[in-house]
Image 1: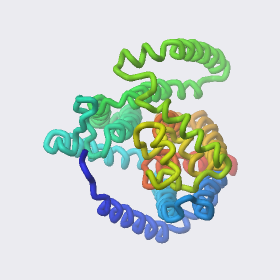
Image 2: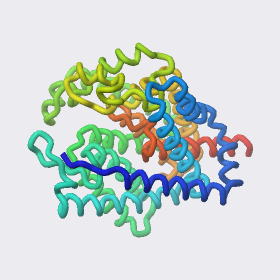
Image 3: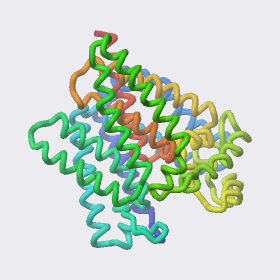
Length: 377
């Protein structure tokens, strides 16, 4: 186990948010315009609920700190949308992931103590991340970014397809099975979303056929999940997740409506998480499920606010795809689909200082703006 000093990371995050605030102030009219135009009441309410939860939090100091970084992360997502077009956002993400890919190869090959972890005796890559699942999750997003750009942009497309290929290679080297499945689903979803642009008389029978196939596949997977997981070297408990979730639900039911405060539950042996640690037989720092994590932090009220906001943005994402004709316009819908899938096994959904949350805010603001502009026009 490699020990990390996170003080430098905290300083870097603080500088990023300070610069973000400065940039927002310099472009306050445009930022305010996006903020007001989007009318994303569910998103605003969810963030404010996290802040207000300090009044009932089981660990107020943690809630105060996490609330500050959640607001800062949300402002970063807001600035990202107000400053850059969708095409520019994807280009910036491609540059970012390109740097991550190069550094991950350097860490794994030149500094294996940091870039590779041992999992049941198998060397698995984690690159510049602290865990292989971190690398796997980011490479899913990276793959989709490069895939969309390669599909849409013809000029020097080999660069994007090269980034796509290297992202998949790192994903396989990380050995994150859930991330591999998520990527396969997302690539299929990309082509399925384009069906939404077809004439209605073609869409309806196509969707009925897809629904029938999906339902048949679901029943087959439900009956053969154990065999399938064993064939790829995974156990039926999803590496202990299914044993962990009932314990987490037990704790949610003790404070079902408003939870334990944002970040107030996972405090080790000194917090309410001691019950989970004692009965699970291992010491997780999150429930490996984004929806359960929201319930722990902000209860069913918080989960309801997120789901309402997510569903509205998702439907508006479909409306945007319907009225557009480029692959770039599918990006917000793809990102929200990935967040929905990844949150089934990971807990980065409402996590402060998280790229997942920043990109969700950006996607939500993007589709909301497009929707409001279409109404006004």
